[in-house]
Length: 295
Image (cartoon, rainbow, N blue to C red; front, side):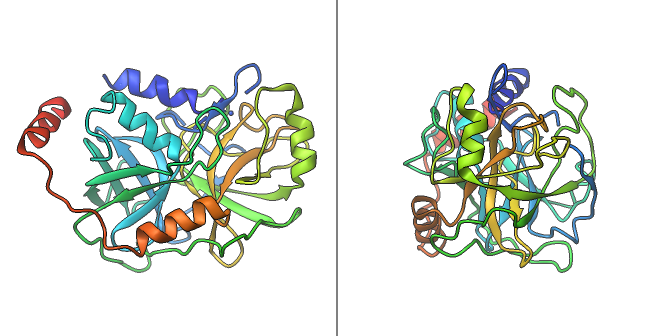
């Protein structure tokens, strides 16, 4: 799966995912959109780079001044790096906002908490939605930093509808070079039955918490490094989160995206971002340990 790239990344930090021959979640520090084009942050102003230990690991989307939306498998990878020692407390997690290029990082904000949906299943990739919380409010700065809204409850993009995905992920499968600029790709939503028929020979199916998007001939797709990034409809609503697939841009294998309108994700996201927020602070020991481990 494409998420295996995240394991490689975290090992290298000590350093997305899709499967044929191995399925991978689309999280990896190496990465770019495949078959897309260069774009500007002003076109996707709620898009941010989610970084771990100051290196890009996933994409994320600003929902309001305290929360960014990403993939649960991105959150899990960062938590697992410290063997779950800090729980939901963020250690070494930040975002870069307002920048087209990773090298610029116009605005950096450090996260206080990272959450994955409690119903996320790392084996099936169901409910692959996560959140990043910032105790200090993040201001909007039009046209480079804006907040986006998610799809309405139960919204499922219709087959044939065009959606846009953006990210700093790999330009081709297996690419080990880190690109600098933001790219996007426009692909049509694929009928879920047809998508599952394509994936029948691999170890995973696409459930109701996800949807597929891509072109039959391949050549256009998200890839490692794009995980967690938003997928947008023509009204700039975030209808999906880059999740997993078989390789990148392979013929007959569209990308798979978590549905923000799926009840499990929608209700959880809404309850979090509309709630009072966590009680920040934590123990001095945990803070000192995090600082030591992050140095």
